[in-house]
Amino acid sequence: MRKKVTRVDVAKAAGVAESTVSRALNDSTLISSDVKIRIRLIASQLGYIPNRQAVLLASNKTMRVGLVVRTYKSFSPFTRSYFPRLLDGVLQKAEALGYSVTVVLDKKNDEYKDLSEMIYSKEVDGFIFSVTPLEDPRFGDLLSHKVPFVLVNNLFQGADCINCDPYAGTRDALSHLASMGHKHIGYITGDSNYWDGKERLSVFQNLCMKQGMEFTLCQGNFSKRSGMAGAEKLLADRSGLTAIMAGSDRCALGVMEYCKKKNIRIPEDISLIGFDNLGPARDSVPGLSTIHNPVVRMGSDAMELLYQSLIEKIEKKTSLLIDSGFIIRGSTGVPRGQ
Image 1 (tube, one colour):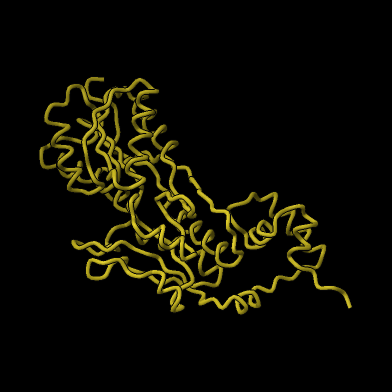
Image 2: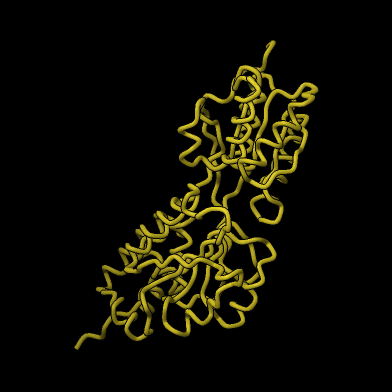
């Protein structure tokens, strides 16, 4: 009787790790198309037939993952465009992998939920964190209890993390402004308690200095209200300022609302650029030029990483940076007098 071909046999024949074979057969975005094709061809030639169901039964999995969503006192999180888009990405990949998704609000009565207990009681197999501050106290405890989790828009040593790299989109946005004659940019920051708030600001500053552009900073926190307040400060005495960039689309829409109240025309009087490229940026009048944040893809890749951790027991952790882009719409134009 012919010996059953295993994944180990395929890995040896291909000269790769066993985890790479699994990723290739599950169409992971973490490896190249050429590698996938080569491994699939070898698997076919050897007669390898994956028995995923047997693996799941043996591992006693619930086939559910928890998407941990931040609890806000003033509004429901899913009224914000970011969370539905992230959920889209998680759900699409989860369904393809045979998993379901449970939304977990991170707090109850102002106290963090015991996520480890949800694992031990077999409610879910692991977690994807949607929004977390840099100093979130839970990560070390979850790692010590060997709870599988992935962070989106954050970094923590020893954890799988996925982030949007703001460099490419910010570079293209500044080049776009420079090409039209803008030389002095106002910037309303995001919340510095969060990785993306700090990283977006750092990249903006470094690129402005590299490109020789003058800039003025104003503290914000991603919110529409901070955009309105920031616009008031920046536009009180422009001193040659001809454009504003904001740490988020919501913040940029706050700038837009302030300008409408003060009869400041966009882009005739001031150009405006946001960050995220979510639904409201497309629907605003004028349409908001913005840096594209690949939120859906980050959700999908986060689910992929969590799956690899759950099924393959991969101990080496991954930190992925996904490139941003830049979308030009009607909120940017040539400065007055050019």
